[in-house]
Image (cartoon, rainbow, N blue to C red; front, side):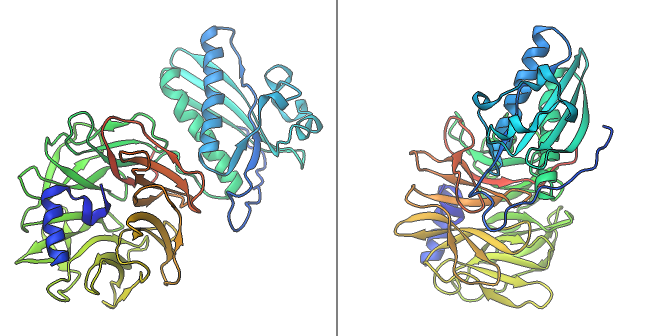
Length: 451
């Protein structure tokens, strides 16, 4: 799918193109996060085998799985580099996991700066983990924590380890990560029909959310992550629907008043949304209730070519970025909702679309066309020169920020067919997120969900 203007499926694509052409708590201590680009020099972390308090093969396997999951999750953040077990000079699972058992000089020689130790106690309906994080150079414990998961160990191990990863991130950076978030996207699957899917933040357990048997596009998460709004051709024209963010949830029609109703987005607070509606032949952005009642028109007709689409609100809700061709080519604009003032944000390139506001509110990621291909850029909301994040790798489009602002998810056809990729906010560590049949496009990252 090629940007918002290019990806609303062939019927809508033709329409748009025509118009556009026409535990006991220990004292915690925060690790200093490197300034500028924190991903340039990843912090080396040692995660040796966890101790299994029981003697069963099942417990040993779960302890091994827990270590692998924590290593993978910490590496996924882009902040950390895992130290190879070949460099370990002792095994805390045998010698002890608490501070008095740790020989810091031995761990310093491994090249690690941080050390994670742990033990797991497993029963038929629960799993308990005791974990410690150590600063090797300062030779001290940063925290000791106990997590308990109720349910079968196989079901609760992943949530338990993700809690540990988040605890490490808070200690390391001072803010929560994205470990309880999800990513929604469009997939053709095996049927060839575009439907909404969702996965965990790392691509784990992708599931189909919508089953409309009709082209379904542009998912948007509600602020609490419980609901998805999207555009679908269920009634043979693009209309806006909302649906619970789990498979089989009820689908409700929001609006069908316009001939073309597309690109819904939620206003912070979750009571209203904005969307681009074509009413009386004029494509503009409106503020709507969840029942579809129009509360306010947010953009006015600039000219016969002044199509306005792709609204997205700042985290504070005081500004709205959107795409318009009012200047002659699709560009990104920002409207100040209190005053009504509209400023053009992008000037480089002739086709810029799919704006995504950063969680901190200071940057906007977008897709821009250069030399016949789309790439992902980031620009300060005050303007200036954009920073290009993807290069020479097919079309890279529809960026969306992680809840903590450290990662950006996007779609790319760099390997032939479109799939979902993720990179850090500076453009490095680009890797494929999901591997599914068909094509995957238009990813959007949820907020962190309530546990």
